[in-house]
Image (cartoon, rainbow, N blue to C red; front, top):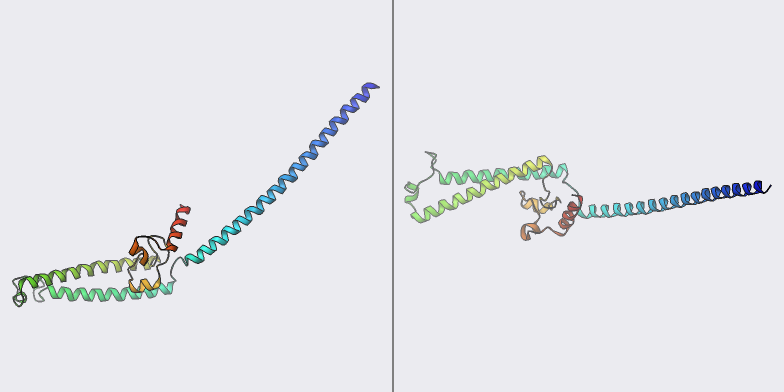
Length: 201
């Protein structure tokens, strides 16, 4: 009789322990679910905040590229400048070449007899300098046309932001903003863009 009571007590205590364990497990599962829910809410809030910050930054930094219509206008301007430069170069070539022979005018030519030799040489040097600048500008215009076709025209090579339209209309070959050109440092918006690029890399 005593043995039966003892075994019942052992059985009861084992059942009670198992119930306790099940209750504890249930509490732990509930707690883990609550923590997971809380963590998800925190993460969602952080993502929302990050998205808002990104949207604000995107608004501050502006569009990524010029529209097709704007690129078309820039292309027309570049082609116009290219034509002007080519005409100027032709005029310069004519001034330093003998039209009949197609050779460069030498110091012994009739042309130089009407001027002092020093002045003649100086004038020729100036003309060659202008021609050299014209050729360099022509190459830069050709590069700009390639960028228009690639739809990368107007992007600053330092920060990837769009160079202001006014600058491009004044200097169609520009590849940086005025601030970087003058100081060798990006503009305030450019600094943000450069930092963001660094974070992405």
